[in-house]
Length: 250
Figure 1 (cartoon, rainbow, N blue to C red):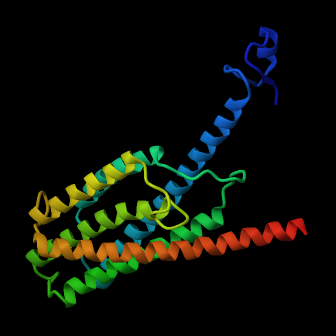
Figure 2 (figure 1 turned 45 degrees about the vertical axis):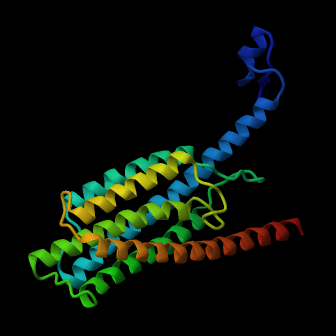
């Protein structure tokens, strides 16, 4: 690759693939650092997007097969998409850890980690539905009971979905890297809005603060479990990569 430094002649600039406009070669380092930041954000976004797709689609399908009703309405699906858009956009401004090694896509790792977390999401959402029906005694066979169940599931998907962003953005514990301020406050704001929508019934059936508090505690408990599971999965892949490098060096 031909590189023309700052102050080079016009002929050198025309022949070069890259032209450095600032003195020195530090700009190359800055470009590499920024590129690796972008890669890490794309990597975490890919895992989050696949995880959420598995969580929502498989849960809706299984709940329809098991109970023969729609766990969320079309309006709720639209609200979930709108509430998820803002935190997803702000992933582009998230804080990330720069990798010492050149970046590369590990599709096997992405699919495995996202499938594990997504499957856990399906289980936890289905378990919440079962608790609401069998423990709280909310009947899906009545119009009022069905509407309350749908609002609870809507709140769970909204809160757990945003919490999943903080799970997928790091390889270590979720607190190991401070999230970017735009990501943090967009997630907090949209979760607060989803909570008010479900609690007071803005466009959906109101579930009150008792059920709202239960859904929040339930989501936070599973958030810790998902984070621990993610760390175990990444630890396996880290060991595998180190083993491959050691084998290659040997």
